[in-house]
Image (cartoon, rainbow, N blue to C red; front, side, top):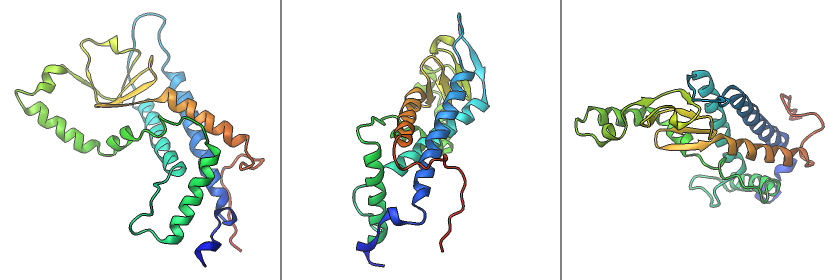
Length: 217
C-alpha cells in the first residue's frame, strides 16, 4: 500500500473514531451531571462529606477528558519512530476532528495537568511524606491538615485551609489535587458543545453508536 493511497474515511474502522468520540463526550456529560446532582450546595452553612464514590466519578471525567484530547489533537511533527503511513493516518484524523471542533474553546478539556499528577500520585505522596518528616518544613506551617476524597460546599467549610490531596469544591465545581486543579463545570460545557456539533454533523449514524461488529471482508 502506497502512502498516497491512504484515506482514513475509506477505512473499515472509520466509524470507530466517531463512536469513540461520542462515547467519551457522552460519559463525561453523564458523569458530570451525576456529580452535580449529588453535590448540591446547602441553603445555609457548609457541608463536608467523605465520598470515594464521587471521587471515582471525578476520576472517570478526568481520564475521559484526557483521552478525548488525545483523540482530537495530535502533535504536528512526525515522531522519531513513527512510520510515514501512520503519520499520514494520524494527521488525517486530526484534520477530520479539527473541522468538527472549529472555533470551539476546549481549554479545560485540553488541561491534562491533573490527570498527569493522578497517574504519578505515589511519587507525590512520597514527596509529601518527606515534607512531613522534616521538622522545619514550611509545608506544615502553611497547612495544619490535609483532606483526601472529600467534598466541601465551599473552602470556608474548614479554617484555616487544609491541603487538598483530593478535594471537590461544590460551589466552584472544581476538583483540587494537591497543587493543581480542574473545573468540571467547564469540562461539562465543553463536552456538551462537542456533542452538539457531533449530533448536527453528518458523521453520526441515525442510531447512537454503542457496540458493533466490524466486518473486514
